[in-house]
Image (cartoon, rainbow, N blue to C red):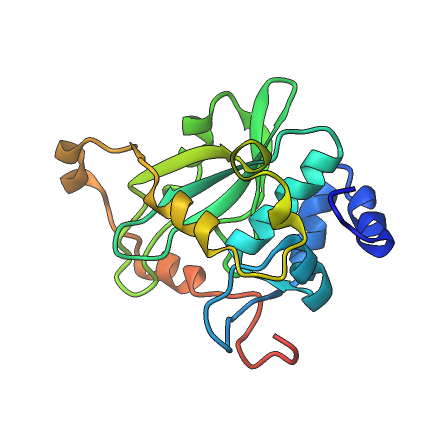
Length: 208
């Protein structure tokens, strides 16, 4: 299946619910890209046992696809800062999201959101700059169907998937805040900033 070997398929077939997929992503170390920028395929993520949000998003999309769901990813756009990739899923008509992150806020979302914008807005309050407290989420792009748009070569390639990451980054975005409302956005307070700086994985962690 898609060029995956027996061991890879065994892992992915066990990840038959969004919760199991999220639990698996949480078990992977954060990819600090110490050797330079990467955009690894699911095969490389499974082998190296580390991922950042884009890489985790692809792996989650693949697991969903194997179990009969559309492999949809979406980018939360934060001008001047790195965006964040989430993988979408739907249960009984309601949307949720799977997410690989090192912080406490941009994580898993249960399937309780009636549309994609509502889901995106659930990330707004905590999506802040951890130095200034400025809330930085301004738009989103997608969702992108990984298989319809890029086929299946991305699943097992040893090459970095820069073309996919760049296409998502450059795609037109949907704004979520009217310009005239920006002056009313309150910055996170000192306590919120402190909590927002908590991380699950440290760059000195072995094997990351």
